[in-house]
Image (cartoon, rainbow, N blue to C red; front, top):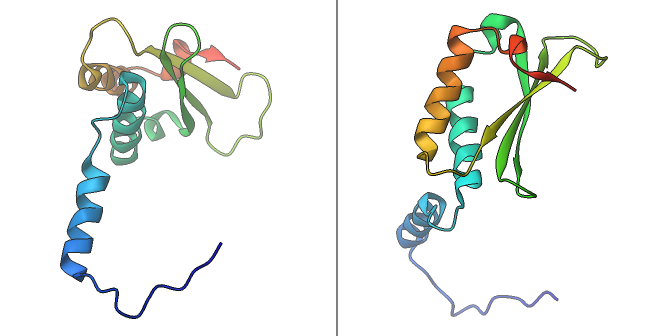
Length: 122
């Protein structure tokens, strides 16, 4: 249902912008699995760790069924999907390890070692 905004409704644009920034920064609602996905997405966008292995990140997915975990799907750069060209790493999102530590550990592992060697083919 569309209702026009009355002409006498006004708001301060700076307050509106500040509220948008505040809302975007509010991550208090996140569960550990959500935090890992968010932080890992940001970290991998900045790093070139997958590129050095001639791979691209395809998706980062939270999994809530069973033990919470994050699945990182990646594949060989430019390769059409076929068995052996797409891989997944699973990161546990429960167990008490701080989410930032989970992310740092994964990025360090991918930076130091070819991730295809320890991933599960999909």
